[in-house]
Length: 448
Image (cartoon, rainbow, N blue to C red):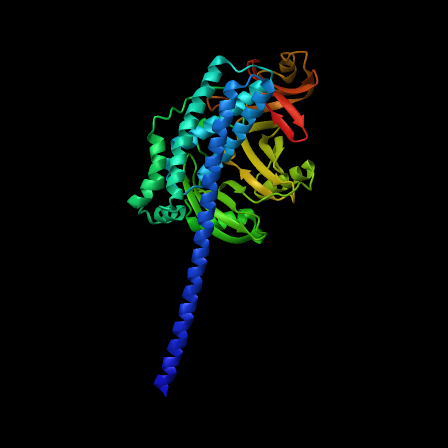
């Protein structure tokens, strides 16, 4: 009798274990399919963006209209930024992406610079057009290499999820390498000429050459990064947390994928391996329509930064596109605006949720500065501004320089001929350092 009861108990236990195991298998299968779809989405968006960038750069070669050139340059800049995000989400090693990533960053920055120049009614020089031609040729070759990779993936030889699993296990096999990882390494080793461009980049990009990373603190593991990412997004919004790709760039990060409870896309969060700081966050959820004002979006961004511990941040420039508002915030120390300490916040105009965040520049540059009294007074600096500019506001600001340094300037905001400008005068020697033209539109404020 006892043996019969024991047999039944063991049979029930075996069935229960079997059901549990099958349920785990289904969950793992669902998770693998979910991650595979994310990687596929990022990759094919990257391929489409590089192809579109090549087309627009080709159009620039034959465009004779200044307005059309500005539209094309602006489109390339935005798509290159988006391509960089998609590239960073692929589960590939740092060495197989470093040159490609640098090229896309440089392409975005250079086209932004030329957008600024054309916006000031200046023509693109012969040298700059040659640079664009070289960038186009490099982009065309990169596009050809990516098409080879598309053919390999479409043949069904390997899946992105296999690469991610192999990376986690540190045992990438030869077949996987040949089809994807090695193809990107091949791209890195081709004769693609990624030109070195030197120019006066915008404030948001001049920190790319900085390497004095200020993130300090203890090293964290992937598990801790998941906790930090979930807290950052908001536990009440989180339905599921999964591991994402790592990066080994100037700030080494853990990647975390978060599935929100509202089912709107996926949120990707990068957390620094040292100090556990959130470097950036981006959501790919669809935004159907704009329902809140730009002012409401700005207040939402300010509340978010305050809640995350970013104090004394002031909004500087903003731009609206695709149902979102992206706002640049700069740190303010005393009465001095510190532009190198930059944080970007992207707000959904549908519900005011934060759908993007980038603190890389802030994490690289932020510190309490020893700001010495300027050698020039405000009155002395004001006299150095062209009298045609009708000054509306003035104050001190620290701006980044091309070489990665910083400069204390007087910032004069004013109007001339119906246009708004900002003039920067070196607070110590009186030289005119920079002039920005400010475009105020229904889509926000853009400095060029």
